[in-house]
Length: 285
Image (tube, rainbow, N blue to C red; front, top):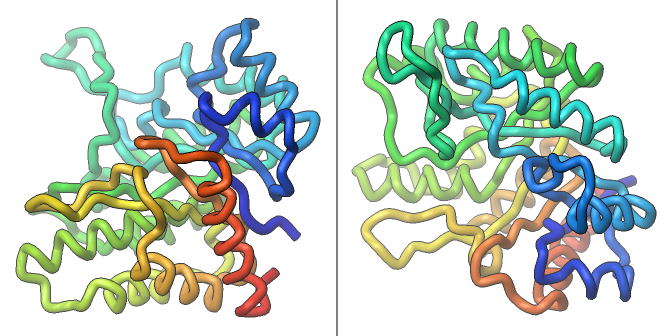
């Protein structure tokens, strides 16, 4: 059974490939490997010879009413053919829109939040279906850390993901840190729910079997809002919510993300070891 893996980032390429630490899998950002050749793709091919690889995208913009970028989807499909990843994922966000009616579609290069409405769900269903048909495999869709919400939200986020999975056959990449970031910011805005309890309630509202991967990361709570910066150790609150997720969903493959202020490799491996130990403690590994 897969347990814990790490995000494979450039500062650790050489050390990981030289030392080959015991990891269930490594995950990379798909868009960094879209070229037909070069050093980056060579590193990924080498990593794939030793580890299962999870491809995690940031550019499909699955919630965009303007539709998907054909070039992006073609490059992703080519990468999937080359690497044969264990999972493919991207975010429940939008980034593509026309600046004016009939004008060219532009990409915002950001993970912008979607409204949780029937119309937004229909858009996401269409785009996820198109990706899965092109890749000939189901994908995972990640919940977002969002800093705004929409007045016309008509369903809860957990219900949105449940219906998306039911209509497309996709799974969910449940980012536990994103849940905590949203819950902490909601508390700062006057929400009554205690953050860990709010996160656990979200998890309990999801169907069993929907989650195909879990993400853990650190966040920055030093300012007026909590920022999902992937720049520190996993917080105690996130570990508590993670334990609850394991109890509900079982031994789901878990990734530790660390993308800013990247530490020495042993620190990252230590966080992954804690995730594996949490699985073993709850009998999920």
